[in-house]
Length: 164
Length: 207
Image 1: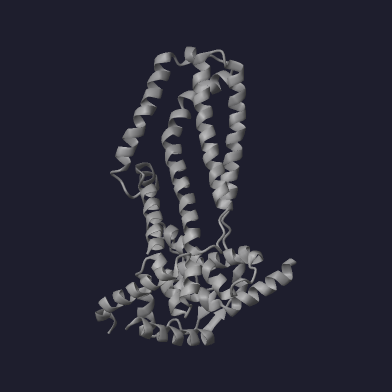
Image 2 (image 1 turned 120 degrees about the vertical axis):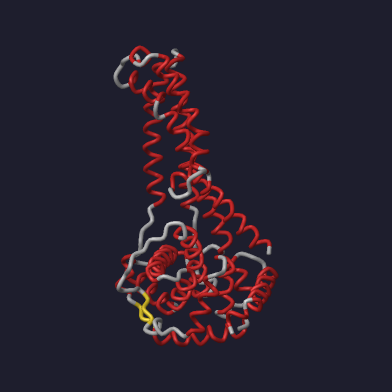
C-alpha cells in the first residue's frame, strides 16, 4: 500500500477506536503530560505495526494489544524518570474530562492502583472482551483469566469501603 | 461497587466518550521516534573499528608480552561489548508490539536486562581497560614511543591495581546512594528491578 492511502486507512481505523487510546492512557497515567506522551508513543507503534495487521483478529483487539504493550513499557520506564512537561493542547481532547463523574474518576483511581498486567486485564474485561479474547491478547490461559477476574472481584469487595 | 457495576459505569463512560472525544490528528506528527537500535548500532560500529585498530597492533607487537597482554585485554573488552551490543540490536529489532502482552513484555525485559548488565559491567571494567592498557597501546601504536620508559613500570602497575580495587569499592559505595542513575546502576539496583519485573510477568503467566 502506498504511503497516502496507507495513512488514510490508518487514521480512519485508529480514529474509529480512539476511545481505546483514551482509556489506556488514562488508566496508565494520571497526569496529563504523561498521558499525552503515552498517546504519542502508542500511535507511533500502531503506525509502525500497521503494515503487519493481517485482519485475523478485530482491529480493536490488535490496537488494544499494542496500546497495552506500549503502556506497560511506558509505565515501567517513565515511572523511574517522570518528565513534567505541561502541554496546553492534547492529541485526544475530552470536553467532559474536566467534569468527569466522580464515580468514573474513582474507577480510574482504582485501576491506576493496580499492577500493570492486572490493569491490562481489567481494562479488557470492562470493555466486554470474552475470556478467550483476553487470554489471546495477554498471552495467558483462559483459566488464568477467570482466576484473575475472581481475584479482582475479591479485591474490589475488600476495598468496598472506599467505593460506597 | 462490584465488577459488574463497574462494567456498567464503564459502558456509560464509553457512550460519553463517543460524543465528547475530539481527535487532533495534526498533532500526530509529534510521535517520538526511538532510535534505540540506531544508537546501539553506531556504538557497535565504533567498537568494531577500534577492534580492527587494536587487532593490527596485536599483529605488529604480538611477540612482545608487555604490549600483547594489555592489547589483548583491550580487545577482549571491546569484543565483549560488541557481542552485547549486537545482542541488544537483535533483541530490539525482534520486538513486535502486536505480540501478546506477556510475550512482548518478556522480550522487553530481556532487552532491558541485557542493557543494564552491559552498562553496569561496561562501566565497572571499562575504567580498567580505558586507562593503563589504552595508554600503553596508544603510546606505542600511535606515537611509536615506549610507555614503560616514559611512565615506568611502577606507575603503570599501581594504576592498574588501583583500577582493580575500584570495582568492589565502587559497588559498595554506590550501594549507599540511591538518587543518581550511576549509583543505582553500579550497585546493581537497576538489574534487580529488571529481575523483579521478569518475575512479575512469570507469576502473572502462571496464575
